Length: 122
Image (cartoon, rainbow, N blue to C red; front, side, top):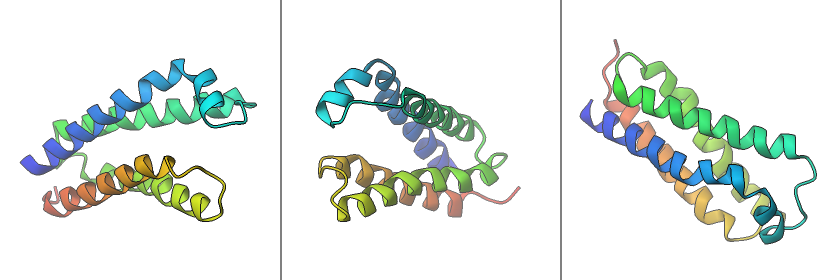
């Protein structure tokens, strides 16, 4: 259970450190990864939902046994971006630099899966 506490706490903290600045970088993202953001509601919606999941990871870290069922959608959150980025890269629709973050999400996915397996059922 201690493993799950650490994994979800570190995962949530890492995610917040990476994602919260994105609220202030819309223009920079448009310059670094053209074209500019044309639908800000999707951009901020994505960032907002991703930040909400990081808070959920911190909540899971407080009581992994109680929140063990939430680990499953947490793993889906990590898989959704990680897998999608690799598929989009294979279709030449995103730059290779995005694969760094996609790979990190897949590593978190693996760690979350191990934490899920190690956490006893309530």
